[in-house]
Image (cartoon, rainbow, N blue to C red):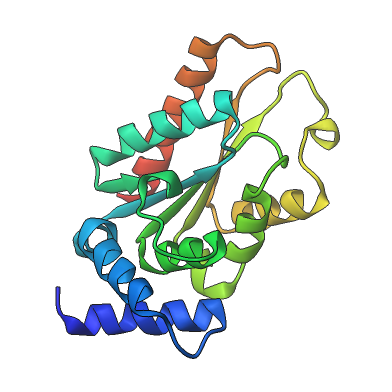
Length: 193
């Protein structure tokens, strides 16, 4: 890890924050973030930025996915990273730029993960972004809890063979949802090997 990565981190922070200058404390925070988190993402052969809803039940599955993917590379949630930035959107972009793989685990569109998905539809992120979408077998696909923007985003990912669906009925017990997500993670890992 050299000065060049710190300078890149500083430049990206200024660009994503629409700021010309940073305060001395911000430089210190960026150095700490680089040493504590960012470096691990950069040096890993494979790094997995795991996204999705942070509602209690869904976050448990995100953590499960992170733990499974950690066996294959450096896997992390945004909550696992040092918050060195004024805005979470800047922090999100910093890590999205540096991860080798971005894995969205989407069960609905209620929350900030919809903004993240919209941002990741930019061309430079498409090749490294994969979606593990919860399918509700008891519902017609048009009745699933995904709005038009997210449905369109998933359709584009499907065209690139970067969408993996896993079944999870609305009333499914936790162990069935966990098992279905585990199978989707296995399919994802098979697709990138």
